[in-house]
Image 1 (tube, rainbow over the protein chains, first blue to last red):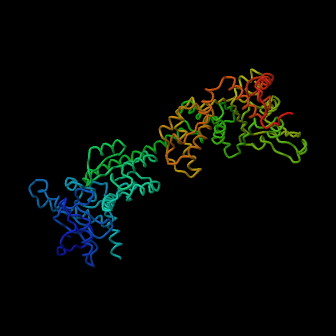
Image 2 (image 1 turned 30 degrees about the vertical axis):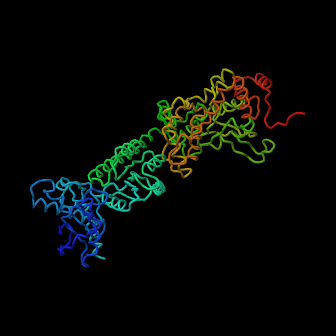
Image 3 (image 1 turned 60 degrees about the horizontal axis):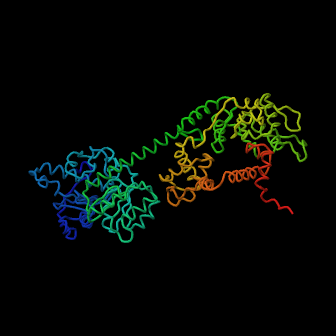
Length: 159
Length: 455
């Protein structure tokens, strides 16, 4: 994934999911609040911070989200909950889960580089609301989106 | 790489958290999103942008979602509104849809549902844009310079005008008042090789015989009392260009004779002059009178008629080409928007129905005046029934309550006033002889308005 973003990656020690992000009535976690918590934990030398969680995420207006990111910002979060085959009553498939996580992570990080959804199905920035969408869309950026990421990375590194 | 950025979405919800999360999510899709907290704010923001979609919360303090939708649809009937609610009841859903909501969502939404709906709207938006583009393209074919029509006869006229524009032939344009005779004459000039030379228009009815003569031919210095300088007439001014003689049916027999000579010999003398000046202008003439009848009554010279009528174009009245009314209305609205700096987007169906049902005795000119007024008084960005005032409707109503004699009296008074009580011209206009007119004036006891009472 680092290759796609022309960056090096590093894994941080885990941070607890903030308790105030829990939506009791929905038994889900409000992803925007998790993003806010993460923003207080960004290392000085990091350009972006990606959070991965097991919790099922939502925003107040949507029944669920696979992840959320600040468009043109620093933080992004993805949830494993609905990427697992078990969520749909199927047998676990670790390699499929890893592939889905990779696509979703790249997608959300793409937003932090200022990308919006791409109309090309071959691009990882294509909008996906279901795992079928996640599985069928491309695994990398299309050329247009790649150019945006490259130019924004260069600008952000200079700062 | 990015989606259609031009889709503008307004989110109206009193809950900040909904405004924030919904705008954030929609922005990831590349839409332009603005979120406001009340119906009042939404109405304020409405004119700022060409909104494609409004996501409106049903329950809000003050104005609720359906009230807001009603208000929005008054000025923007085509606006797509999606009603959002936290409580799904069949009743409110049915009510919202009946009132014209595009869709109805229960909070929280399934992301797939809303994505799909917005995608449909984006496609719809594309179709509308395409439709507008195609309509504009189509309009180009319906146009001859400032004239616009899709009536078959008019399109034939446009074709004929384009063809005759290339020649030097005299053209006689006939048609009721307000049908666009001068516009057609200008179009012929603009389409002709003479387009860079002047287009000179003379209204023959508005001048007395001697004034018209000097207006057309000009006069030498000292030709008559008051002629202190040499004055070039319209014939000379139109050199290399086009001379348009409007209301040619109204000129005197003497001038008809003079004009005939000019047309035949292609040269003329200024009043009081001896020098023969050659003319190289193209002559176009127009009249709203029945020249054939005038010839029969010996009020118009047959030889001049044939000289002018080399090519004859008869513009049909607007009531015989009602299909042009919506086209003309759009055209006039566009024109007045530019002139008055307004942003009228269209006209309601009811208003069009009223306009289509009228007979338009004053033709396109009258329609233009009615639209001009409507654009001035329109409160929203749509012209509605209440903005339309038809001048002829009121007179129609009056006619129904009056006897034939009363209408005759009123009409004679109007014609007399129009002609400054010139009996010859008034009788001419009414199609009766002078003696008959005198008798009618006496019978109806008509008096010149503003004249001092005798005694």
